[in-house]
Length: 194
Image (cartoon, rainbow, N blue to C red):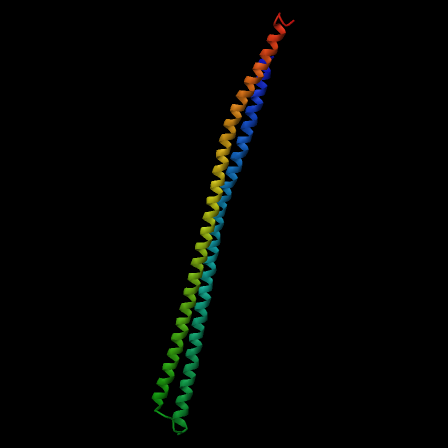
């Protein structure tokens, strides 16, 4: 009977230690999964930000092109109107028709260059903002993964300690249970105590 009781105590203690160890391992694995998920989320956010930046740059470029075209059309109309006014009315205009035309063309070119520079600056701003946002997103994702991995390592270490502690507890409990049953058998079989 003493061996059966001892075996039950040891078996129950070992199963309890094993179950606790497995539970801690499962928690550690979940933390690792959460860390990996954080990195995947970071990459998805970066991809979405890059796509948005690409579309925004295209939109800014298109707007810049539309402004340059509108400026060109407007400038050509002004040049045509100024040329016809200067040549047909006989009015006194300072400079020749060629001077007026050249002046309008220089103004048009200056406006077109300003539009182009503004468009380039806007595109550079979108690129810079997206790059900074992506760097921040990935830094946060890496930090989240690092924290989750550290927590998982702690769970794994706790799992190993719990299993070792459970084994030692089972051995101690088995020894104690065996000694109690041996002592009780000795006292009942001892002719001096009866």
